[in-house]
Image 1 (tube, rainbow, N blue to C red):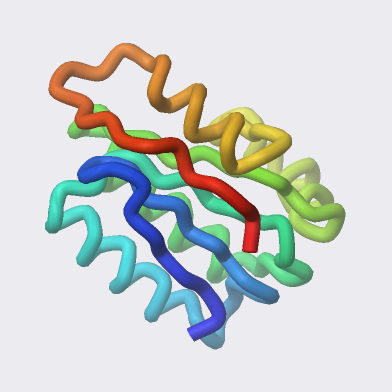
Image 2: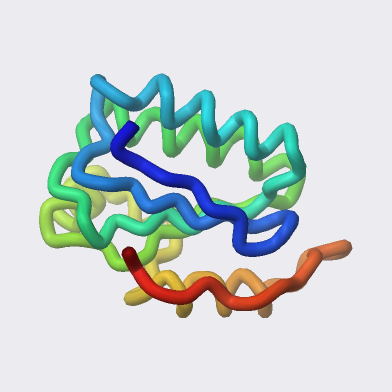
Length: 129
């Protein structure tokens, strides 16, 4: 697995996507995110700081997560978007669906400020490992 998922609060997770989100690891990514969603995670910050490859399969699982979370008031946001990922985001106009933030901390802060009933809060995530 080239990605890691770390809970920031009971309802928020930071996903460090790693070097690639593509056909090789998309199924594992989707399964891991679904497991976290079943455990109560409603907000995902996707950290693309070290990501060089995002293909259509990877983008598809992100949209799948989005479709799963939206009806229950959840969100998926992008943070620290690398240049290669930004190219994909621009070409696919994905920026119209997912908010982007310059850092994981900025994304986390924005989610904490968004009005959502019953949000559990915790300490802000640190570092971008």
